[in-house]
Length: 516
Image (cartoon, rainbow, N blue to C red; front, side, top):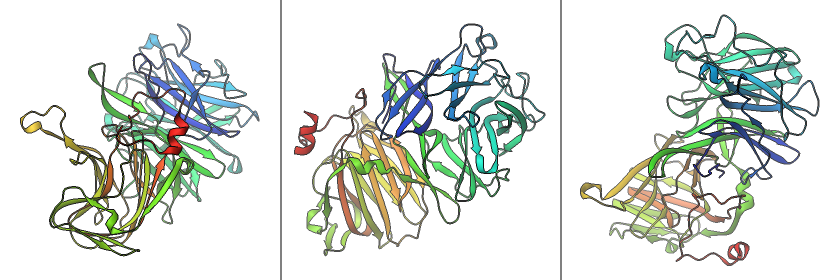
């Protein structure tokens, strides 16, 4: 996890990540002021170190003297060894109501120089777009630039979050398009994609993967990351029945290529209490790998950087190793060296694996063998306070809740029962075996089914506890249950949200020696 918290708890905003010479370079906004673009580097994509800030707002009277918004960094196709940063700027004299796109250059990714003049900043034009504050929502949408370059096809496009100038005002959001006709010269064209549904399509991305083109964008209406696909770069762009790439709370995704692989970075936003009032906090979770299946659907896989953090693996192969959480008299456990059968034909029971766990990766194969409910419990106490992950294997639906006693109970408010995130997954049917993977790493919780990330959420309500599987009027079969602990790499500043390890659960010897 990476955060930008300071004295007034500043937050990380929209991000962009490039990989160069063995380092990930993260560029991000700093909220709430939007007055500079920060720069951090990482050799593993997970722990970050801040370096020289990339760009600041312009001097008073300049076109970008109010705020800086989303940026995109990419190699300069006309100057080998150099980089371009397209970024969004706002002007104080216009009260920030007109968005423009500026350009900055760098030869090393660390020192950036504005390129004012020579056609910059760019202003949206053409007969397709809102170009005046007298239209639509009374501001000009032209932001979140993304430069797409395909040298094999001689294609150089600049995508933006823009708005068409016809139709219902809150349905005009589109992916604007400008073509690079010469070095640093752009000509506007018709939008690349107009869904006809959303107020804006924010932070657009375009990539080619396995002979298909994919648009990725963030939608404010549901605070989710969506995608669309096409056979040709010009479209038409379509979506599958489920085109949500990451569930609610994940936003402003950017793609990052590392050789022949594609990774997705984004911020996660959540509500929390800071200085006695409720606020929105934004943090950078670990990246995910972007792949496509045989039908052309985009899927996200867990980042293999966790492999380097894993230690102390152990397998649970015997039913006798499990303990029941609540002691339901109907609960039963049996099995052999290959399979473990968990049963609770009446009521609820959670079956816990040995030990208490804080940062871990749990993988297993599960199969529901009767009607009823099933799922997992994570970091739960002996009273059952913790995270509950419910699984509907028939309809392909997962939901993560925090559920436990209220610290300050009052009448019917003795407990808290809050859904943190819900998501859909591709189902094989209720009684088919599936592979699951759970990662908890600090406040980050990630859940995958059959190697597809379904949930990705940040919450620090529960730091450490028991882990297991539950059934409610159901029978579940387990096999290949593997638990691994995860080291937590140290960033330059230990974030305030880092959980404190339970003193009753001492550090393993190898980790304790590393932290002394």
